[in-house]
Image (cartoon, rainbow, N blue to C red; front, side, top):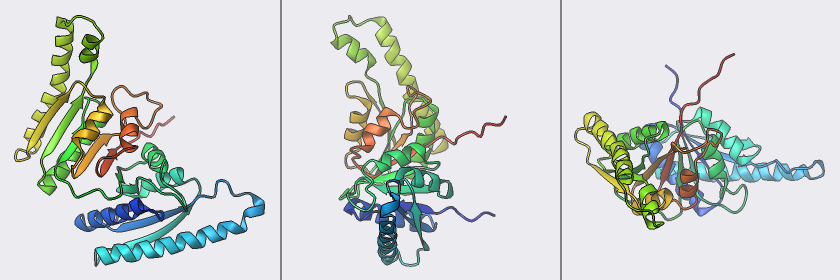
Length: 288
């Protein structure tokens, strides 16, 4: 049997990164998985004349890793922790490392030694495992929220969120934000049977999702919400304020195939209201 893939956490010296470290350590301990603490030395801009500075960055990164490893084991005694120093572009290096992980955890922001302000977005776009993005000072909330739209990506997100809610004994809120008919009517177009038909068709997405959950998790508390006013990202951020976890697919059904991270996921990750997990579709290996 292959060894269990660890939960990996990318660290910097920011407070959000520290929150991500502790969140990842607690999750690894709860799931009885090892924790891999990773720091990336961003060497993309290292010209030949400043290469000696790269060694300083390496030493700094190793110091960060040692400190983070001690924090993780202090917070979760008995946790198996490994330390890994990577080099290269931060987003690309973390995305590539995700092949070896069951989950990649990142803080929302940073400011020195490899900031993750936009790196979380880059890693979430290329990762081959779920990516959790943790903000600074996010309180321990209640309930799990998942966004749906009928796409394959959102179906996978629902499966992840339901398993989490069931394991943690939390209520699951399934939210579908759809603003089409409301916009047409507010723009002055008459309310018609077509708009009503569209709403009924979209309601089927929620109904089918709920029916599937009732079958797979008969004891799970499920609430469904149809949002017809706010943009999807705004609706998700509002619904997940104070939640324990928000789960999204990497792209929705309106996403272009070439875009690895959809606009809704991108918008939410710039202002995550609580710990937020982006699930990803397993990429198919194309053969000649």
